Amino acid sequence: MAAEHAEHEATRAALRAVIPRLAQLLRSIADMDAPSGVPPWTVGDVGAHLRACYLAYCSAFTHEFIDWDRLLPPGDSPLIERITEVNARAVALFGTDQRLHAGDFVAEHGEMFLQATEGLAPDTPVNVPWYGKQLVITLGTATGLVLSESLLHGLDIARGARLPWTIAPGEARLVLGRTMPAMMPLVVNTAKAQGVSIAFDLAITGGPRLAVVVDDGTATVTRDASPRRYDCRIMAAPTPFLLVSYRRMPLWKAIATGRVRAGGRKPWLGPRLAALVSSP
Image (tube, rainbow, N blue to C red; front, side):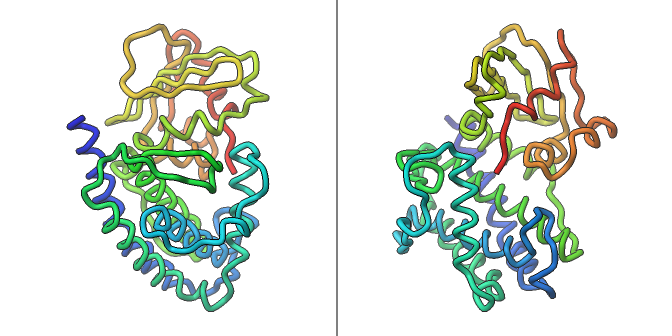
């Protein structure tokens, strides 16, 4: 429990540090229509998406009004389909003036989120209707997701605006440790994983250590799992693995530069992990 609390506080500290950096990046955008690192979105689209993300996570604690009926698709579709549709609707909500002030919005709402969650336990439940009508995650996971959105979409903007942006190994470790155990099982490609049974030992340099077990269309992800027999061990540097996981770096490049390596009884299964996980 002490380790859980310490990592949660480290994630909060990392988020507190990245918020002003992200806000300044958003204020530095010269061309909102420039292509971003996530086509077909423009740099301005990514800024609008970040605005929506910060608003959504704040709303879970500040009760800021959001017209969820307008934003959320009907029914309860698979998470990837749902997020793709929610993202498209959310980005379309913000016009030019709101996009120009996305930096100020992120700075304000980032501080609101941190203040509203100050002192709350990392296992505090958080309703996240944009992921699923009944889906609840922990505050520890939610904080990691806000950090993830900030770091990765900061990179997307920087690539399009030709501005510097870094994701430090320590930041990547926190994102991977706080988000993957809860979120990876939700984004498994059930069609590709049908009939598949593979146990991966995922060892990130400096931590975390994750047991990823895919079994007939489902997956479980466990931190620091009890010893067991694995099919494949994946050893990866934290930042490259984060970028590969979110499709910001091709897997072949990470392998070619030695930053992601596979071993164990069946090392050839390593690339299967990326194929079994979907991304919006």
